[in-house]
Image (tube, rainbow, N blue to C red; front, side, top):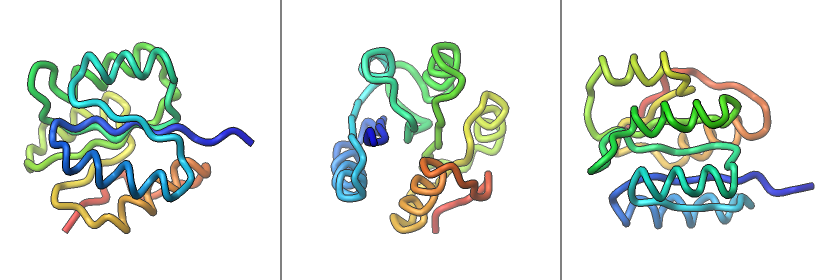
Length: 131
């Protein structure tokens, strides 16, 4: 069976490395991007099953990246990450097709559970949040 593909999009290198290590250990093919252009290139060339997408990225924000991912392929699952509590942006992301969001700092075990549930076809709450 082909490994599920996961793309991590965050401008903070520490978060990308942490998530890459966690999800590579879970058995996923993992990709990373520090900005919107790199993220969209990976989406087009590798078609990830799920994208962990930071809301605040210099240049192109998470909502714009989310819109372009969904225009390319509506079936790609997206979970938003944010260090901010902007309810209007979170609502807009949900309206655009994001499955859920995590507030930084998030609980890595909750994130692992949510990703595993989404990629195994299960479902979890749309509004999971970090601690």
